[in-house]
Length: 114
Length: 457
Image (cartoon, rainbow over all chains, first blue to last red; front, side, top):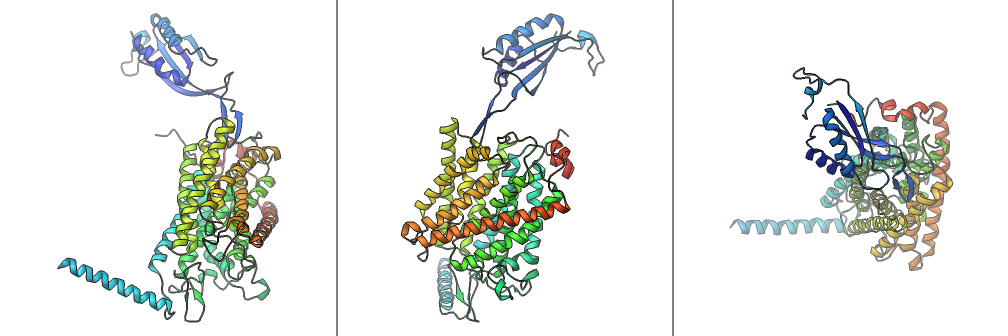
C-alpha cells in the first residue's frame, strides 16, 4: 500500500479531482494548507504593497493499493500542471497497515479502490 | 359613506394640526413635535448601531483572528460603561451649566448628575432649526430633553471606541477600561462642552461642528496617535499593515457605519426637517465620493481596487463630512469626499510607514486626519444656501476658517496633552501594554478565555 500526498494549486483542485475520478480513485482526503516557498503572494493593505511571505495551497492525501499508485501519480502530474513556478509536489510513501473500522478488515482489502 | 367619514376625519386632523401649529407660532404652550421626536428616537438607535456591531465588525475584521473577540469586547464594554458614565456625570459635565462662573465656558457642573432635575415632560434645551418659546421665556427645542440626552449618549459611547483602532492587538484589557473611562470624563466631556454647550467657549466663538468632527473624530484621532506611540509597536509589526483576518467583517462593519451615520449626521439637526434631509444627502454623497476615490487610488497606484480600501474610503468620507453635514451642499460634499480620501490615503500609505508608529487600524490616519480635514473644509465650504447664518471662506468669510483652525488646534493640543497625562496615570496603576506572552498567544484567549473560531462540533 502507498500513501500519495500532493501539494497542488487550489485553482487546479477541480481538475485534479476529475482526473483522479477518471482513473477510478474516488476516496481521498484533502485540506487547505499554508506554506513557504518561492512563489509568495503579494498583499495590498491600504495602499501598502508587500510580500505576504506565505503560499496558500491544497494538500491531497490518498492511500491506494500498490498497483494503483502509478496511475494516481500520473493523474495528478498531468492535471495539476500549469508550467509556472508553484505547481506543487507529490510525495509517495509506504503504508504499513490499514484497517477498516466497520468490518475490522485489514491490509489492502480495507482500502476502497480495488 | 365610510369614505366620507374618513375624509372628514382627515380634514379634522388637518385643522387640528393647524391649530397646534398656530399655538406654537404664538408661543402659548411649547409642545413636543411627534415627527421630530420619532426621527430622533430612531436616529439615536442608528448611532448605537454604529458602535455595536458596526465599529466592532469594522475593527474586528481588520485585526488577526486571535484578537477579534478582544476588539468586540472593548467596543461592547464601552457601550455599557460609558452609557452609565453618561447619565451619572457625563451629560451634566458636557451639556449642563456650571454654577462656578469662570468654569462655565470649560465644563458643565453637576446640576444634572444622575439626570437629577430633568423631567419627563421637559423639552430639549438644545435645538438647531426647530425651536419655540417656553413659559419662562427661554427657547426650547421640539423633542423631549431625554431624547437629546440619549442621542448624545451614543456619541459619548462611540468616541472612546474609535481610539481602539490605534492600540488594538496589544493592550491590557483592565488598563484599557480604566483609561477609556478616564478619557471620556476628562477629555470627551469637556471638549463636547466647549463645542456644543450653549456656555462653551468654542461654541460662543462660532466654531462650526455639526455632528462631531472636532468633538468626536479629531478628539479620538489625536488620542489614537498618542496612545499608539506611547504603547509602542506590536511585536509583529514589520513597518506595514498586518493583513486583515476577515475582510467580509470589515465590509459589513463599514456598511453598518455608513447606515448608522445617517442617524449621526441627519440626527444632529435635532429635527425631522430640510436641514436633516440635507445632512442625510451630503453624508451619503461624501461617503460615496470618498469610497470611489480610494478605490481609484488603489487601482491606479497598486493596480487593483481593494475591498479594505473602498471600505476605508467610505469611512473617511463619513468622518470628514460629519462637521460639515449641516453647512455644505452637494459641491461641498463632493469636494470633501474626494479630498479626504486623497489625504488619508497618502497618510496611511506613505507618511505612516515613514514615521514608523504603529497605529494598528489607522484610527489616527482616518479619523484624526479625516476629522481635521473635514473641520477645516467646513470653514472653507460652508454655504449660506444651506443655513443662511453660516458661510465659509469661498463665500468670503475668512473669519470662519480662522475659527475652525483655532477649534482644531485647541482640540489637538488638549486631547494630545490630556491623553498623554491620563495614559501615564493609568500606566502607573495598571500596566497598559499587554504582556509579551499574552500578545503572542492572542488577547482573546489571554484576556477573555475565549476563542472566536473553533473546530468544536
